[in-house]
Image (cartoon, rainbow, N blue to C red; front, top):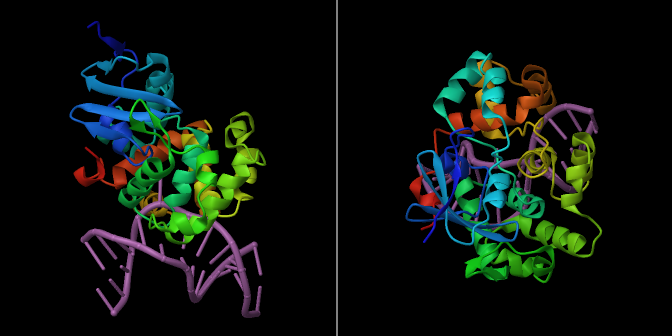
Length: 280
DNA sequence: TCCCAGGGATGAC
DNA sequence: GTCATCCATGGG
């Protein structure tokens, strides 16, 4: 069998770190292979040194796009590395990249992540896919807005997602009905995207920033959660209102704030997810 | 038992 | 406008 692969020598990545640092959900590990239906297409990939090996049927351009292999990591590291704290975070997390998640999936995922843990969020995303999503080549896929819109809030509660259930049910119906289109926000400015997102019941500033960064390609976004707050306090000695922390990040990191955020997050959280978070 | 987890809505001032 | 409180759930 002729094997398809992506050359990583000019665009390095640490696949496992990138998929398990807590930004991407829905990936499953089968031996050395990572599997997910990403934006409708089944992807099955494994890293071997400077090669990303693709199982037959996996589209290399689709994978490269999801993994943001088009980002210039060296340029980013040169810019952020001038900051002493980021310099350490960069050294601790080589090959970490942001991903380009599907906007609808990302929106629901980060609603679910609210006031929860990455482990439980993983479980909830997986449960949604298995219960409501159609399968793609045998692999569970995150449910479409229409598929999720068929579920009542009461039904969703059975997935142990608590008070988030009615928000999920409502936003699914709104998107399914065409009243709101998350993917269209990719064409909006960062400010406009945030404004539209926080107008939705159940989405606040932090969730909106996560969607903006991990799905809408707004690399200037700097989501502030409990870990980032801790990182800014410990390593920069600053604390206060989130507005002030965002202003600090915007000034200090500028257009690379999103990468600064994911490196700080991965660093302070102490490396990859526990093994228990990875579904075999 | 209390505290925390990739928060957000609500109501009191 | 800011702040306290509540909201489900589960792990430490």
